[in-house]
Image 1 (tube, rainbow, N blue to C red):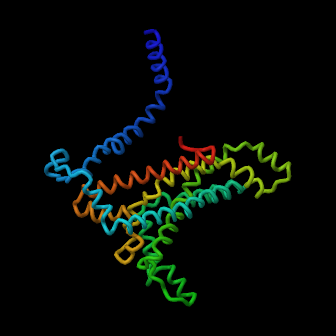
Image 2 (cartoon, rainbow, N blue to C red; image 1 turned 120 degrees about the horizontal axis):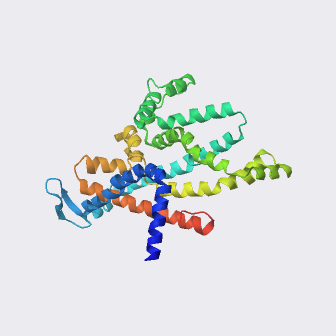
Length: 308
């Protein structure tokens, strides 16, 4: 009884001491409970022939019918391949960009220039996907786009970028790099500030130049952060943003641009087949979890950093 009373008193003291922190955390907690955890109960829709007029519980139970329907669909492998390849290209080309930018900014000695570059690189992150997609369609227009005007000025024929399936992925990944690289550097710049300055001094005494210090001090110093971000991004490799793909793709580019998210919208939500859409969403979540666990296990086995 005394132990319980002591633990209760200790808990009250900690709550009182950290009251302001808990109040700041409360909105985030409520948000995740309402919009991420409670909706998990809706997974049951994927096992039923959902009818909105009869409700979830009164709808007919059909088991794994919609999962089999998706796996046996002729569209399964094409949309899975497109989603996976787009995710891999994002990981391969977009992930190193903020690391490189953070390393370059770390070498800049002029604070004014450094802040200017940071501000300019951060701004695209706050532009909505609708505006970014509109800008791409305007700049890449085969008739009035600035890019094709430059191509014509160089003596070449204009290119209809948005109707060629082979160019959809490069255009999408390039826009993602431009839009999010600056914002992603914040994490790495914060990690760089945690590196002990004495390590740089010791390396300089040993005769190391800028490149040598970057290779032997800076990169190892931020390596744990890089590993964590790689694990998290690998877990999200199939979670491609729906909005930008939906705004940029068209029937001419379905061959490479139609991903799971747009397929769910077109065949599930727009078609009113919510059970089918829910089954695809659950499948996507399970595969993402598998990627996350495998990557984390690999990082833990061959390195010293992992999520758990």
